[in-house]
Length: 207
Image (cartoon, rainbow, N blue to C red):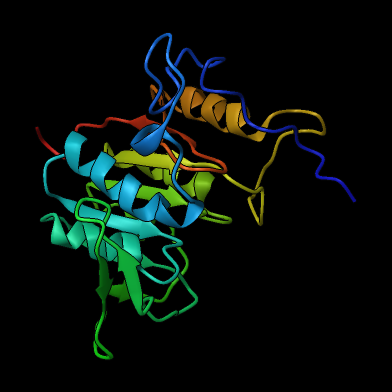
């Protein structure tokens, strides 16, 4: 059965410059979109450029690579995910191009629970990358607690509400943010797949 929701808009439709593109030039070399497996490295670097070190909930963080990378950048990050998974054995450092191996004892802070507003209020920044069933809760928490959030909507799975057939999930979720009094700012990262997201800047973390 085909997915009933249309794909997200293009960067151009959101008024964004396509990542890595220089006006009037074809992309090549480092400008080409990275493989999807590098999304954690790209997102971690993007966050570190825009937010000061603060407390971060990696909502639905899975294996925890994003949390690991944010921790290396000075953030106090932890995974919030009811399903425990081990860190990957290795990952690519995009800055140096080298493959980094993680030891058998490598771990990140983790809360093996479902995300909810009561827990979410303790964090300055909420990051939702494949946060199945928690995207709306992240927005509601940001609105109530004044925290910031970064959301890359993917599938509509286990959410308490969803758009009707034919409506765009990405734009519908951005509309839900506006209805909560938030001001979503769109962005695009340079990897293949669903690379569009939006950011909400709250009063936390303090600049």
